[in-house]
Structure formats: C-alpha cells, structure tokens
Length: 120
Image (cartoon, rainbow, N blue to C red; front, side):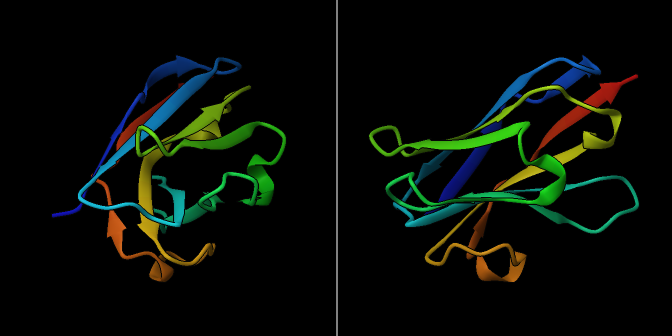
C-alpha cells in the first residue's frame, strides 16, 4: 500500500525559510512533485523531479525561491522554500507517479498535505 507523508509545514513570517519533506512507502516513483492549494483556490503545480534528481521543473511564481530535491535511499523528496511570501500560504501536497508533469491528473498517489502559513 502506497503512502506519502508530508511534514515540515508551519506558521512563519514573510522572508523566512521552510523545508518540507515527503516520505514515500510501498513503492518507488520515477516522478514526484509538489502542489499547493490556497483557501478558495484550485490546487496548483509547484515543482516536480525525476528519478535521478537532475530533471526538475518549477512553476514560474516559485522559480529562484523553491528547490526540489530527492533522496532515493530514504525514498523521500524535499521542498526547500526560501524568502517566503504571504501568497505562498496554503496546503502543500506531495504527489507520485511515473511521468514528470505539471498536471495534477498525471500523478497516481497523493499525500494528505502539510499547512504552510506565512504572515506579513
């Protein structure tokens, strides 16, 4: 049974940093990604990464501030978030699948999410 468990969210001030983690169990995935959903908004793509870690994609609003990485030995991916802004507030979800894509429908498994709240 596949499980994705996110951690690392919290309440922080603008300008701070956070590192989110997503630990996978029950399978290994060639493609993994992060999405986020703000209150009243649709879930949106944040970043994705391939198996080797050398192929990564980012949504334009987060380029230069977010870094996705993975540790295959731990079956875990990370999202380093720097220079947090209030508009980064939302629930951050981890996703896993076989194709690196920015489309949520392209992923087969999802975590429960971790809340990130950025105060101004």
